[in-house]
Length: 170
Image (cartoon, rainbow, N blue to C red; front, side, top):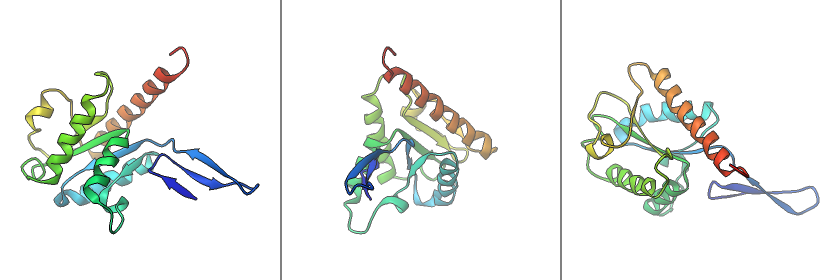
């Protein structure tokens, strides 16, 4: 079997040919800083348990890959982008900030009512002003399960909406 950029895979058939099977699980990019890895791994597991396909650099990047371009590509093809905000991440310069800017740029090309960029607060922190002005965030504290369920609910609602908009006559 050969996977094509998370879009699906070619698998052998009984007749000796190959068939393409499209991936239907929603791809969810997780942007975070290393200091928040434990909480993000918990979020990764929660999304997987609810039938999502979370993208996490530590799990998806292979040795020798051009990681900056691979991350940009993963952001581009993801159905949703979760910005994992904490008191550590919002003040830390570097790659995380670049990922936020890139995802906001990707989101700016979508219809206004389309949900793509979902800020999640891992702890009590200030949401960056550019995000706070336009996008509602979800708290994963003090009740982790409640916050995770809100994220899952919005993703599922958005997926249903997208499918109905693509349906013939929809």
